[in-house]
Each structure stands twice: as C-alpha cells, then as structure tokens.
Image (cartoon, rainbow, N blue to C red; front, side, top):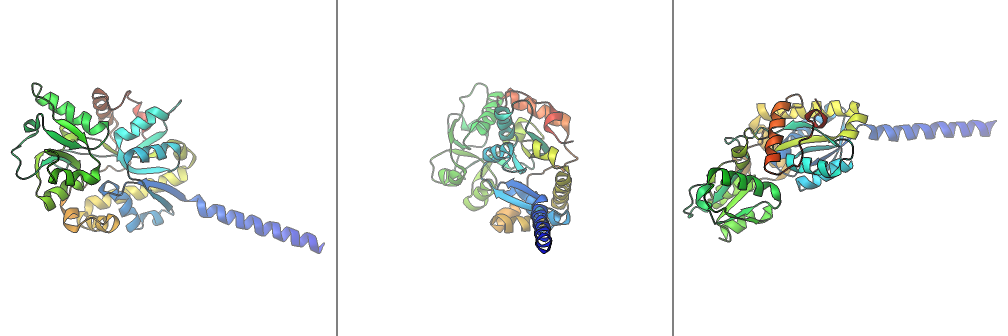
Length: 317
C-alpha cells in the first residue's frame, strides 16, 4: 500500500511538472524581424513592456531580408513577421500555397513622396538634377526584381523616348561605398543608407520615393502572421495585435522617444536616426482592403506578382 501511494505521488508530481512546462511555453509568440527602422513597432512593444502587459513571451529572430522572413513565416518557423516587403510576401505565398493562402496581413505601410523611405541620390558634384538625367547612366539598386521593376516602369512612363539607365545590383552594405567611389553614377537606396549618404557623404537627392511615384500611398511594407498559427491560436493572436497596435500609436504620439528607442535597438547613429523618415504602419484595424486591392493590381501590372489574391483571404480583418 505504501508503494502504491508513493507511485501515485510520483505520477501526480510528474503531471504537475509537465503541465507547468507546457504552460510556460503556451504564451510564446515567435516573431521574425528586420534589424532596421521598419521593425520599430516591435522594438517599441519590447521597450514599453506591451508584450508583457498582454501576458506574452516573445521569441524573436533577427532575419536580414524580406525574402527570408517570408519563407520562414510560410514554413511556420516564425508565427509573425513584424514588417517586410509586400512583394516578397506575396511572391513566397504564390510559390508555396496549395489550396489556401498561408499568410494573413494585419498591417500595411502608407508611403508617400513626403515620407518616403527610398530615393535616388547622386554625389554632390554630379550634373544630374532629375531621374531623366540618368538616361544611359549606371545606377546601383537593390538586388532582385522589385527595385528594377519600379524604376523601369516609372522611367518608361515619364521618359518613353529615352534610353533606360543601366541598373546594377549591389548589396545594401556596399551602396554608399560604390557611389562615393564613383563606380556608379547614381544610387537607388533605402533607409538608413539614404539618410546616411546625405548626412555623412554629402549625397544629393534627385528623385523622391520611387515606390510612391509609382503608386501613392504605397502599401509596399506590411506585417503578417502565419494563417495556420493564427487560426489555432486566437488567444495569442488577439493580445499580440493589441500590443503592436499600442506600439504603432506610441510611434505616432511620441516620435522623439520612438527614435531614441530605435537608436538603442539597432545602433543607428543619433543624427541619422533623428533625420530619417520612419515608415508609417497601420494598426491592425486600419487596413483598407479596397486600397490594398488597388495596390496589388498595380504590382501585377509591373510583373511583381502573377495573380491578385482574394483580399479577404490574405487579411485578418
């Protein structure tokens, strides 16, 4: 009888420990993010304790490209992508889905010419004054199709009788060096390289946001969740969205403090962080489906996506 009691006690303790371990992981959300200004809402949510307030534990993964974030999200290695390129997300979704969309968008950017995170710059001694002046010249761009398609579309639309610039794929880490060294005549780049080049290297902007010139407001940036995870874990999705919505509101209401948090999170130079534009992202309740559909139609026209997905199937609300 004594052995039976000991055995029962052992079983109860084991069950308790297993339940405790399970519970400790039950409120974990796996977040993938880019180590740059576009992930500011995530940095804010951490710094201000919004995740903790919602009872969440965050397992974060720094991922260095939008393509990799999209692949990891669709594969389920992360539950949430805090911010990435809309084109990268939809291209990955097109390649991977079988019978249903594998992602749900919960936030989009609102990029205009005035707040753009991208631009074309030249050295200060360049004679170029506008995009038109780069006809036949060498222009450094981000590797991949997106930059090339946007630039080609706008140049052909505005200057149909002129020769296209020669677009040269250059890794972002070498953007400033390549223009400064005279290896290219112009550079199409994003933040923080854009502001760094202007502030530190004396580069001159000759064309504002290309994505906004193509379509404004541009919804080129987005945040999304894995649709399978979202369906199975509504008790985690709801507080996660609440935390991020708080962070988005904080950025709007406290821009100076938000930039201070950005400096601490990413290590940007203070002058750069205080000068650059911060990509405006929507709260989860603010995604305009009609506007999103129009933007996706514009992406299809330039060949960035093959098909326009059903908007209701790729958005949360």
